[in-house]
Structure formats: C-alpha cells, structure tokens
Image (cartoon, rainbow over all chains, first blue to last red; front, side, top):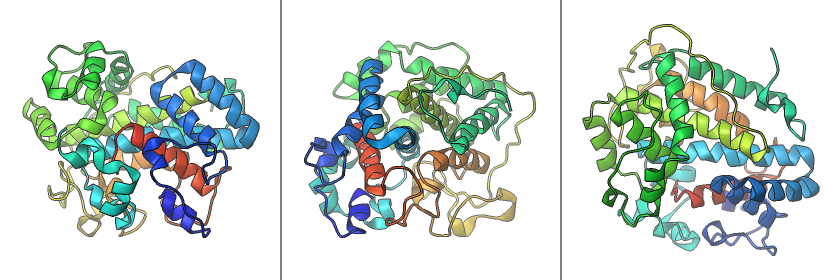
Length: 117
Length: 246
C-alpha cells in the first residue's frame, strides 16, 4: 500500500524501510517522526510516545497528530484480525504484494511466511 | 451524549472518531451473536490483563511460542481456551498458526465464539492504542447489557481460504445483513464474516481510524490531515513490528 500510494504521485519508495525503519532521508515527509511515533505506540512506552507526539504535533499540527494516532491504532486491530483468522496473505493489497516485493521489504523473514510459528 | 474519553485530550479530536469509540464500547457491552454482554466485557478486561501477563512476555521472548509452559495471569472470568485466545492474539499475533487455532477450538470453543472474541479483542486494541497514542488513559470498561445472543451462523460460511470459515461475497445472503463495501472486498474485510455483526461493529470503528472501504484503493486521494504515503508509513511500521505479513 505504501508503494502504491507513492507510485500514484510518480515517486518510488525503498520498501526495505518497512522492516529496517525509516530514516530522516526517507522519501515521505516526516517519515522518521511518523515511524518513531508508531513504534512508541506499539511498545507502549509512555515517555517515548509523549516525545514522539510532541514532535509530530510540531510538524503536522493537531489534526495531523490525531490522524497519525488513529492510523497507528487501526493497525493494532488489522494485524490481529489477519493473524488470528489466518487469512491468505498472498492476496494482500489486491495481489500487489508479490513475492519479490515481500523479499525486498524483508517480510519473507516473518514467521508466517517461514512457516515456523 | 455525555462526555467523551477525548475531552481531556491535548488536541481536538474529530467528532466521528470520538463517536466511533462510544459506539464501539456500547456494541461491546451488548449481547453479541455467540456471547453475552457480560462475557464480551470480560474479554475486554482480559485484553488489558494480557498486556501485563508474565507468561505472555515469556512466550513472546521465546524462540518458539510452543516451548513455554505456564499459566496466564488472568482476571478469572473466562475459560482456559478463551484466555489463551485473548492473550496470544494480544501479545504475539505474528506467531499464531492454524495448528494453534485448531488447538484452541478443540478446548471447547465454537468457531463463532472464536471469531467473535477476535473481533472484540481487535476493537479494544484499536481504542486503547488510540487513547494511549494521544496521551490519554484507558477508558473505563462499560457495564454489560442484558439480553440473549442470537446464535446466527451465515448459511454461506465455509472453511476454505482461511483457518476459520468465511462468507465469500458471492455466498452472502440477505439474512446476513450488509457486510462488504464491494464484491471485491479483500480478505481482511472477510475475516470476521462468520459473525456478521462483529464484522459490522469492527469496520464501523476501524474505518474511522484508517480509511473507509471506498477510499482505500484510491491512492491519489486523502481524506485525512496526513498524506496517503504518510498514512502508509505508519501502517507499514505497525504491521512490521507485529510481524504481520498482510
């Protein structure tokens, strides 16, 4: 979905950042701050969340912060639906997530793909 | 409506998002298709308990989740199978397997119960993550509402593509009620389709947080205050940290 959203505006993204992390030089504006916020919410570190939230609010404004929080929250649900019901992942993003893309993104190292869960 | 959990937030929260939380908590408190309101609220409580469970932390740290034995730190209101389902889905969703899912069902859970529990867990995870992200405490759990569960099972449900039965869009019948934004709805939309009311409750909440179904594949359009690529950076990082392939 990230790749598709970038391609819609004629740009490319290094999908390895999905697993490696997004640096300051990422192609998406404020990607490093967005990723840090997402990571802090996942690990439930209140101090880290507060710092990341302040940084995001400064660059995105209050409405942007709310939508960043809402998006991070939404994927706490999606991942659980997908992984608890065992839906097929080969059709994700309408079949756009082909094996080559999963390999480039580092997703083929995930437990479900390796079959070692 | 009275005050919302977002009233104390440092930034204004859009009304549809706040309303989606209130609707979702009301839905969780109400009788479901397979579970009573009391059991659904007990599941919500167990979700929060699982975040602090020592066994779950040990399982997540282990090379193999099956190698760790012990008892979950539970509030005590649910069966052993329900507790295992809630805790593993909360704490280590990226290492669930079909064999594990079948083992949970074999301990006495019906397929509809399993799916409904997963729906409640996912909703609570969304709402608690959202408030946490905005610096707010967990909302107090609602009081359960009385009433009987319906026991409705869609006649078109079949186990084929996933570990649990799904209702493919072409197999949905009028009695199921509305389920899909499009006949091409992806598997993530179909995941809870064995329990149509859970599917509707989940998506009413999730769409307000991410994007509605009719916008998801319009990559050049954004209806949020962040761009679509920015939305997807967050989505991708949260998914990757959960080891979610989807």
